[in-house]
Length: 199
Image (cartoon, rainbow, N blue to C red; front, top):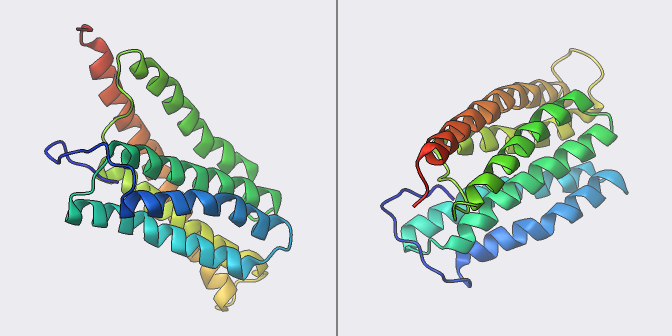
């Protein structure tokens, strides 16, 4: 949920955006099962697309209806991170993406987890989500389904699988660069906060 500093936050739990984020969380183990057990790529693709759409939808509804909540600010990025992690692991186990890409993306989250632990000592539970972070997540959550669709691509002809594979890799590479760029911006935000004397 992309929340501006001027928007009012509430402690409400049962809101439409929170329900959407919670449903996205429930979809994470289902996605892994679809990818790894029956290898039902079509259904896994549909689930990823629905997850990506609801990721945008929950933020839009929260802003339009004033249902911005502290719980939502935690659930939304948590669902994003878990979907990215689950997708990375599932696609790597299937051999659709290389393990180095898993390491590159998950290491960014590990670095930020350490930084957030330091911020929590100051009573800060999270950093404001900015557009670059959402753009990176968008690219990854749309690139991975394309890679899944292109899993059967074998040549360089313009079949649906080959086009999906190439588009998927374009989104994945651009998303990875933006993901780390956003991470560096978060680190700079955290550095400024941590350099400020504690009250």
